[in-house]
Length: 371
Image (cartoon, rainbow, N blue to C red; front, top):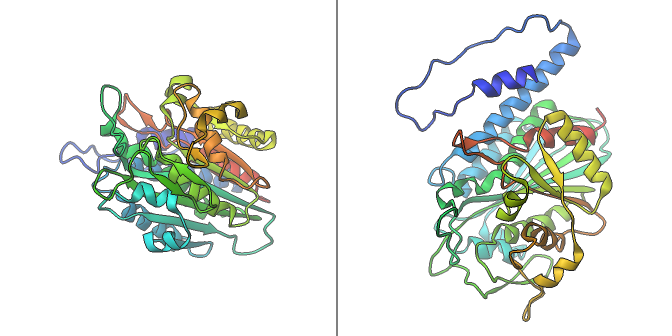
């Protein structure tokens, strides 16, 4: 905690400032921590995770004219090439996604001049057997205008919608840390359906029906409930990797921020075991989560007259109906958790990203490893 607090406390993102860059502190000595291999190992771990959190912060802080879906995919590929002993990268363009019938994801991406990129990093230990297969799926909207249901009015925060890829930053930040820590006995898939939600003549309209890659049809009654449409195809893809457990992370709903405030993420899962695992991981990372109900009776509000479902229900229980929507795209045999991190992704006082989720994800992967 001391090392992490120091590294993150001293960090300031000055990449886009022309003047006033402060002198950089080159080193810090900690006195009285002791010495030996065990201490060195813990210090190295704290440094690895802190570096990953800073990487995640910088992704979220990057403006949308800099961090396009293509650039986000390039950042992911760099992780795989840096840790090529344990990582492989697969980057799919729109044509490949069309072959995989990802109509839900591509519907969101259709309006933007910046093409989408579907990111899949796979971590496999260089030796030893694999006992558990995990997937981390992150929402990757590098900008969200709302589409034809454009974000308007006070509190819509359209100027902050570069942070709508906060889930993908958590996932890729965790990948960077895992590449350094190299836990044994666990295979991890890091998946992001990256795109922009924009407005144009080719864009998705309210009332359109899209078909996800598992064959389910969705009536789009609100183009600003787009994150779940991208996650739908990402979750189907994750299940097809033969994983045992999936965690998805997304800046998904304002309703979750209203319920839990700016510093607590909502957790939705039918699995008590998975909830306990993430609770244990969060205790180690210091990040705050609160388990929310998956009230199945609320699904009634998500029924469509023309398709299998609509993409958003009414105002009541908005974060719950969003989670129930995602559940339609997860294989019942797979343990699944949805984390709505719309609140803690951003620090309003500092006007900067928090790097939320990375520390907990790394701890969770380690819990499932044989280390």
